[in-house]
Image (cartoon, rainbow, N blue to C red; front, side):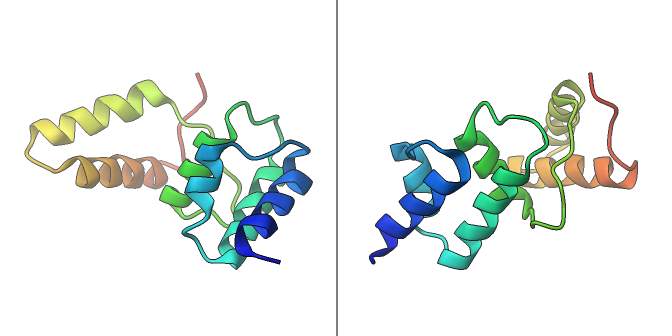
Length: 112
């Protein structure tokens, strides 16, 4: 079985739907084992996932594993902190990482 078909079948098992072009474009460059981990995380989500492509993109960016569950983020505060750090001269990637590390230092933010 080729990689494309394997990812497609694994996605269908995890979500009971066919993967979109964006999802396949996101998952194909990854190692097959990592793709399976991400689909397991998607399947384990305690709430229904409205946008699988955004969920998977965030899981990849933040390095989620099946042992770590995604946490709710106050996007208003996250965006404010990112713009604050960018005004201070950090690159967008550095600002995102700094805001994310601040959230982890505080033990997460309450949901809004």
